[in-house]
Length: 464
Image 1 (cartoon, rainbow, N blue to C red):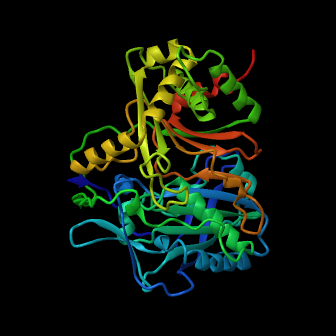
Image 2 (image 1 turned 60 degrees about the vertical axis):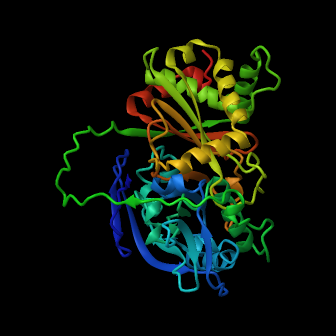
Image 3 (image 1 turned 45 degrees about the horizontal axis):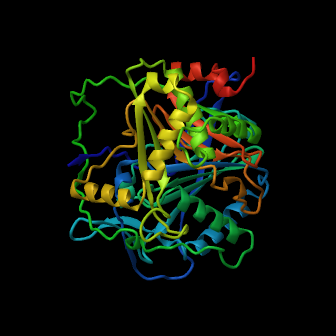
């Protein structure tokens, strides 16, 4: 029986004031102007979709948050909000599951239910009159960003009572911020950006979207899994006797690698392929090795300490039969690679790259089936931070064309993850703003390790 933590409903009319420690010691003040709900523009009746084994492990993660910063649009703010709502009502005819809510059937199996009486997607408009784009662009962590994106600290399980998607549009002095919170039990990164790009298509005048979502999750897995999830006992503010010390505070930072730097990393790791190797290491495998080595050095682990590398792999083309790229839902699984820290840092980079490549290659339809069957026999609901000891866990993907999401007021200046689902060693990879093969790396680490990483010339590719 899994124990889950719930949060209280937020006040929709709140004014948020967050102390920001900067050179100017500013306050970030966000005022919520309006909250409405957007539904498909046409009646769709009642539609149900069973959540499957690929979805359910994320029920105890938090809502997945994405944040995009745009220049301009201030004078047209009200018109832009209405245009976004209109486009959303059109696109939700295709992506109606995001307008639904979580529910359970009589057997306790989770499902998504949409009917014409459902509230729909939550849309919030807000203003941060004292904040400029520049104030946010230089922000490495998520403190300033936190009140620009909804549902901080809200579990996916709360989709039983909350919308499955909440969007906040905030007017700045010189731009706009779009903060989105997606229920991670409903969709993964591939589906998230499919939805976002489709919504943008409609808002820029397209009569239809280029790729329809594939909505039947049971084509990928049709096993019915009952989950008995129980919220924690109420403590009325008193200690529950848990003496576990709080984890050290985390720091977050973005490291931006140009196309030429990515190519150098890849070339270096492919310069000495392991004996018997039949294919080169990919950009992802090469960059992952670069990050894993650097974070392990930064943590100053003992040689005998284990370190885990985790990647959330897209299984759409790995399952049998393969699913289309447009499959809407979660179709990812975590793949783990473990070794001793001393062996990792003492070995040439192709050693780690070979382990990562082998783990990814071995995760075929047979391995996925075995993982699903094992989990279904004993469902374990992991928390977002259960990725492994001394872990480096990579999420998102530079393949997602996040800087092409243009709703008619320009492409984003920056794309970020929110504060949810971050732990020591969590890494998000994004397409770089400069385009090409450039990649932005968001890393969360304990403060001392981050300090070491910031000085690591090998990681930063600084020549002496």
